[in-house]
Amino acid sequence: MNKNSLAQFNNILQGFSKHEDLSSEINSSNLTNVFEESNQKFEYKFIEELPENIAHNIIYIVGEKNYQWMAAFICPCGCEAVIKLNLLKKTYPTWKVSVKRDLITIRPSIRRIVGCYKHFLIIRGRLFYIY
Ligand SMILES: [Zn+2]
Image 1 (cartoon, rainbow, N blue to C red):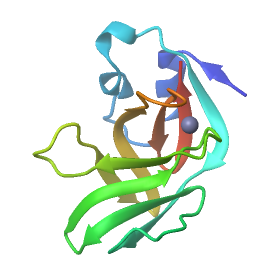
Image 2 (cartoon, rainbow, N blue to C red):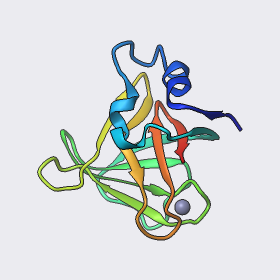
Image 3 (tube, rainbow, N blue to C red):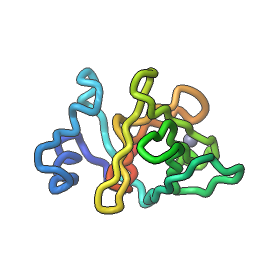
């Protein structure tokens, strides 16, 4: 596993978007964070309703055309918790899902406040834990 400082992390992801500085994604008070890339990759699926059995490493984007209200997936850490993220802009907290060249990105980072307490970012289908 690679451990990376924020500066190195930004380097790794250069080419992702030239004008994006991911440090803005992280609390400015936490610039000593270390990023560790996981081998796991995420795919995505647009669906109208969340199925009862959801698969690992797939982010389900739930809603209708032009109106997605939730992203759900199994926590990648192995704790098996189903993480559900609100995508509605007017409800806090809210996340933004984007898909570019078939790769999914979720902003901002996801920090679990129960269970495993993992903190991670999903960028272009890649998973980075933040410590
Ligand atoms: Zn977990």
